[in-house]
Image (cartoon, rainbow over all chains, first blue to last red; front, side):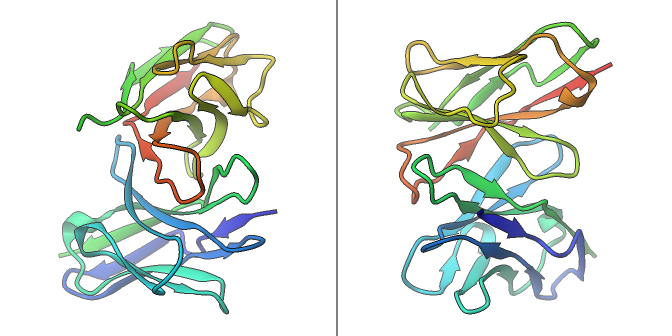
Length: 114
Length: 115
């Protein structure tokens, strides 16, 4: 069965420092991976996705993610964190069934302190 | 381009009552999804429509939940009767198609509290 794990419930980082939010996945076949961000009382906003090609994917708001097939990981990164990046981040993998539903991790809260 | 619209944003009901949520997807998007997000968890798919046909409703509790997308555009999700464990955020999403590379775009959600 397909699954996604986000091993950290919360990540704390100082403003201006690099940040990493971790994600590992389990899927049969080629993975289609997504990152979303959720601000309080709002829906999920799409950040970026990996479909194929370059292992480093660039997305919105300066975020990027590195796909590592051997480690089955898709970590979200940003070179310099902003206080406004503080939010809940979800990693998701597309199911390999015909419907292709998204399977989400449990989420990681990112706290950026000034 | 307007995003996915949902209403109401908040709803408080007592257990055994009924409730309905409405979603209008991004214009031109053929695929519509309803997800349930329980506090502290990631969203879980309840039902997926392609135009007005159901593609996946395997995780929809059909004894109490129902959904329709009659004209292939907007959709309604209903719970009758509601249970305490239905307290959650109900998210609607849409995508152009249902290929695996398609990006799903989410609405703001409806926060339901069942007392």
